[in-house]
Every structure is written in structure tokens, then in C-alpha cells.
Length: 341
Image 1 (cartoon, rainbow, N blue to C red):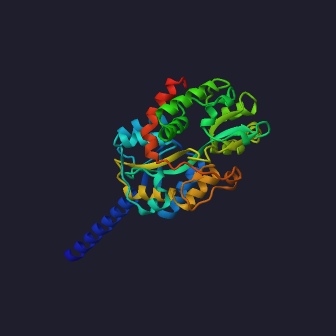
Image 2 (image 1 turned 45 degrees about the vertical axis):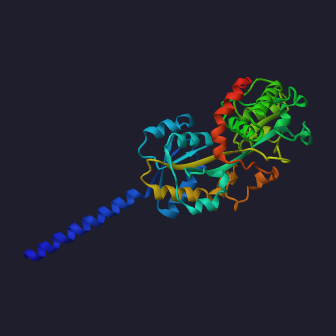
């Protein structure tokens, strides 16, 4: 009788241990994603990732300006995603990220779109293009970013603010290519060619160009895609009059702004986070980004969507994203000194 009780007790303990192991396993099938952007299209990708791997993506949405400060206090972050490179560079320099180990990511993303220390990688890219009214402006007269700073462009340009990270990274790339002195002179020329004060965002800038308040502006290409597919009819109508020109095709290529992601230093689900990063830079996710979010794939095996291809092919800058991050503060100082506010 005692033997039977012992066996029964042992079985109960074994079942309990198995159940406990299963619970622990289920708890580990998660990755905590801190991000400054979360759309329905993003969630569709995370759901697909969970279907394929069994790993749940728990999204913690954080304002872009607060991403780094939140990471300093967070002990549950596994993966950090940002809609601009600046936040990731700040997180890296604050020692809040750690290197991933994945030949898959290395094979899926070109080296200049990854940090040298593998703390983060680009997920998507967007060319910083010149937008114009395609029914009123002759795009054949356009050539480069620097051409916008000359006398021939006087009183024809409207811009976003110096706080726009996309403008900062563009100027940072100019510092790298042209040097600080030439960049300073170029910004002064650009400020002298403004037809109006700076406006808030890409959408307002394109509306100003369509409305005749200026001939030219600088925008991210995906902003036009968003306008063309807006639920608001007036935005779709405005977007229908906008053309895009990709500058610097005769030399350095068009500047790219990027979104990206990296491993949090505090990550406790590192393997899961790396799997998600591999998925997001893989062909399925890259195709989804270019179709639903109008962004350009960083994976060279994926073609841009038909809409993006309709805007034309272009040569992109191949400046390392780490260099742009390192020069961003220098760029902002030059912008402010020239009166770009």
C-alpha cells in the first residue's frame, strides 16, 4: 500500500513539474518591443510572426522623444524599434543596446545600413526627395540638393523645421560629403531661398507646393504614398498633383532616412528578439512594408511596390548610418547658426 502511495505521489510531482515547465516555456515565448510607432499593418506582421514561431510580440508604445529615457528605466525591454535613426543612435551611445548575433540579418541588410557594432540595423528606408507640382513645375531643371541653395532657386522653397530629424540627417550627410564649411554656406543659401516660413510636416509642405505658396520642398517619399492612399479625399486630390524628384543622381545619390531596431541591453528574451529582427528584415515583412506603408525595403531581394516603382528608379547614398548619427549634432548646430529653426 505504501509503495502504491509513493508511486502515486511521484506521478503527481512529475505531472506538476511538466506543467510547470510548460508554463515557463509559454512565458518565455514572448518578446517585449519598445517602439515609437505602431500601426494596424505593424500588428498584422507581429501576428504573422507569432503564427510562424509561437512567439508573442508585446508592444509598448512610447513617444519618440521619450524612447531613450524610457529605456533607461525599463528592465523588460527586449527589442527597440524607432522610426528614425537618431533615437537608436542615442540609445547606442547611452549604452542601452547590445550586439545581436545573426548571419541571417547580415545577409538580409547591406553593411552600410547596419551599425558596425551590430547594436541595431535598418528595417526600412525612405529617400529624401524634392517634391514639386507636376502640372506647374518643370522637373528637368532639378539636379541636386546643393542646387536648391543657389540664386536660381530664390524664393521658391518651403521647408520643415530644423527639429525634423529627417532634415537633420540630410544635413549630416552633407557634412560628411561636402565638409562643415561648404555645408554651412549651403544652408545659408537655402535659407535665403525660402518663399515662406517653415511649416510643420511633409503633408503641409506638399499642400503648400500644390497651392502655389512655393515651387519646391523636401519630403520623405513615403509621405506622398500616405497622402495618395489617405481616407481624406482632399489629401488624395492634393497628392495627385505632386511629383517627386530624386536628387544627386550624378554623384553621391539621394539621401535615405531610415527606421530601425536593435536589441535592448536589458533583454531577457534575446533569442526571441533576434528572431523577430530576422523576420522584420526578411522578405515577407519587407514586402509588407513597401506595399502597406510605402517604405523602401532594405533587403535587396525585395522589390519596391508598384506605386514606389512608378516614381522612378534612383541611386541612393551609401553613407554608413553610423556616420550620419555621429554628425547629427554638428548638423543641427550649423542649421541653427544659419537661422534654420
